[in-house]
Amino acid sequence: MPHHDHPHRGRWHRLRHALRPHSHDTADQVDRELEGSRAGIRAVWVSLAVLAVTAALQAVVVAWSGSVALLGDTLHNVADALTAVPLFIAFVVGRRPPNRRYTYGYGRAEDLAGIVIVLFIAASAVVAAVEAIRRLLNPADVDHLPAVAVAGVLGFLGNEVVARYRITVGRRIGSAALVADGLHARTDGFTSLGVLVGAGGLALGWRWADPVVGLLITAAILVVLAGAAKQVYRRLMDAVDPALLDTVERTLRETAGVLDIGTARLRWIGHRLRAECEIVVDARLDVVAAHDIAVAAEHRLLHAVPRLGSALVHADPMAHDGADHHAVVAHHHRP
Image 1: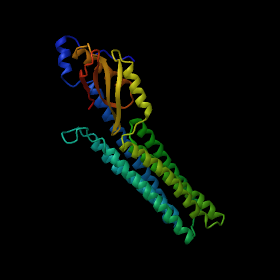
Image 2: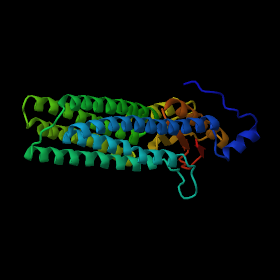
Image 3: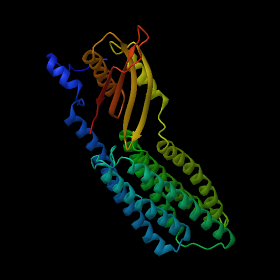
Image 4: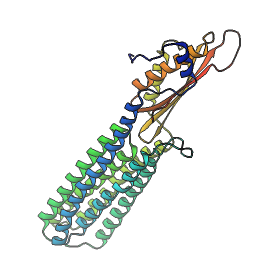
């Protein structure tokens, strides 16, 4: 895989580089990291604005019609809009640089936000179930059914727009919390469709239609909850897509001078990946030459692995005489 030439000219420069952490296009790396946070913050605020307008319009219809189902849907949209708060805090905190206490930085704040969002989804499921059961036991008449139906469609459209936007941006920048929040918005969209179906059933005289649909919506929310919880759990447990690890191993093996590879690990820190890898080089190489191979491997990883923020490549010698010692550690870090 092609990559730019590395400016190691002169033995003194090479030796000095071997003794210091290596930097690869530092300004570009910082720009990409900040751009990911800016995109996340922008997605949060756009979502908040769309859902606030949707909830406000639905509230007007609630006051006019007295629909309890639409009131519940409006409250769900308000709760979904409020998930912008933990996400905004997470993206802002995640931009803080590493320090001596938090040596990996504050990217894990997004994972904490993901937990809060999963709890919001769970709370939505509980509220939807309680409301549906209550209405099943105590049916209520609703006025102005056409307006309620229109408000339900409006709620679905607003939530679906927000869901698609959050999920798209979240996947692009690697934010599990933003993806989970997008799934949360989608569940509230299902609730809005339930309002529409329930209004249609009421129009036909089926007083049980609204609460039954509410129970079906609760089941749908639970399915989405399971998916979001699984995604956040995997992020907390440092799970990655095995295909990414395949890319790492293939890239290392294809690097000139690499005879074999050892352990390769990946983990998410916020919406960036960190790699820690071992390679095997010829034991007859000197320290500087082994270091140059490790640096080349790092460069290739940064080009080949999407959203890779930093890589550490450790070079071990291929023993020819039974010797077993470490040759060099080459470290590359993107702020």
